Image (tube, rainbow, N blue to C red; front, side, top):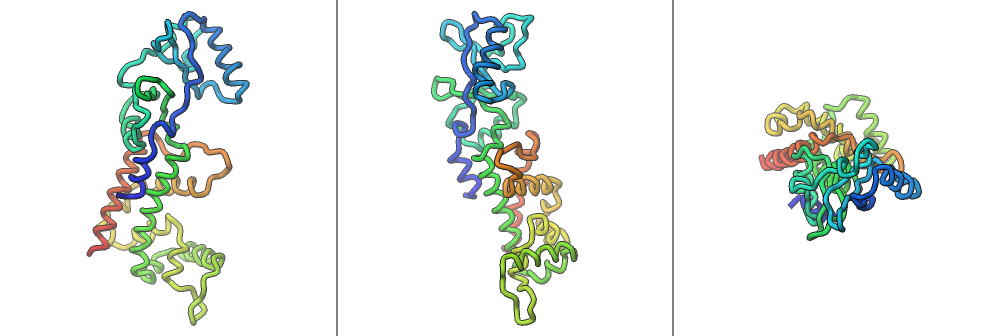
Length: 272
């Protein structure tokens, strides 16, 4: 089992979902709900009201859910809510990968999270950008990079010649920063120099090998660019606040499937 799949089975919806901002009774006015939501619950806690979901009940029974943008002062609260149906429910113990398949294959934007018979929060695609998911994606991308590196290192000199002078200089600079030893000709060891190449360098080198491309056609998929952007942002976050990864909802499952298929191709190639 890959590191990605092992991690994605350990992480569940419960680890990434968000708690409801609160519960409102159907007898309340839209104005009262708006004030309570935006001022008492959000402003005081410094959270954005548009990022929250609330439940609505009648006689202590949940009858629907509500987003802040759904509040319309010209309507009653019952007219603003979205009723609960089976298509929008997901269990809190659903493994991460299964949750991704559910959220990315459905038109619904909000899923209500159930722990047994109790509503405990909501799930949105953006919640997959949290640290637990980032760890899974990083493991998947690092495993892919390592598999490509192993192939490149088997013919290090051959592949290094396929890098442009500029990218080769950058790799040599990293070699120097890492204080790796030089050979008897006072030059870098090729096997160590390929360790200093970037994620995109590995794609560039392998793409220039027709034999490799013939056996591993996934190397030329356009999702490689998305993989590079996701990998770099996870590895080098721009600031302490974790924002969204550069990936769209419709790209996530295809990206994961492409990487896993590519890994199979790489594994088969090493057996030749």
